[in-house]
Image (cartoon, rainbow, N blue to C red; front, side, top):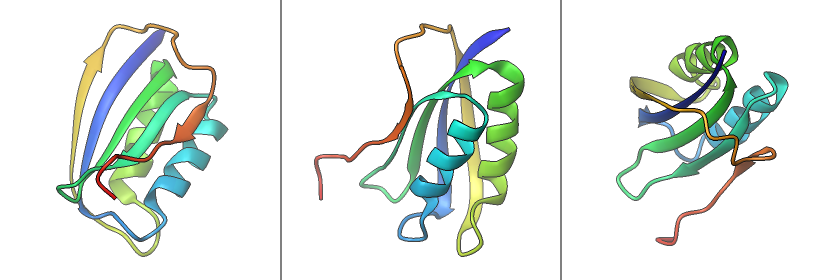
Length: 95
C-alpha cells in the first residue's frame, strides 16, 4: 500500500549528518521525497512509498545516526501523491 508521511524530528538532529543518513535510509527503502533542516532546530521529512518502508524509516529516524539525540518524532500520514522521483536533501532559505 502506497502512503505519504510528513515527519518532524526534534532533539540534537542538526549538524550530525542527520539529513545525509535520512537520505541514504530512505533511498535504500525505495522511498521518495525530501529532508531538510528547519530554523527551529528540527529536521523535516516528507516521504512517499510503501507504507511498510515509511514505517521502517520512522524507526530509523527515532534512533538517528550515531552522533544524534532524538527526543521526539511527530508523524502525520497523508494521501500518496507520487510527485517525487527520488529522495533528496533540500535546503531551507534561512542559512
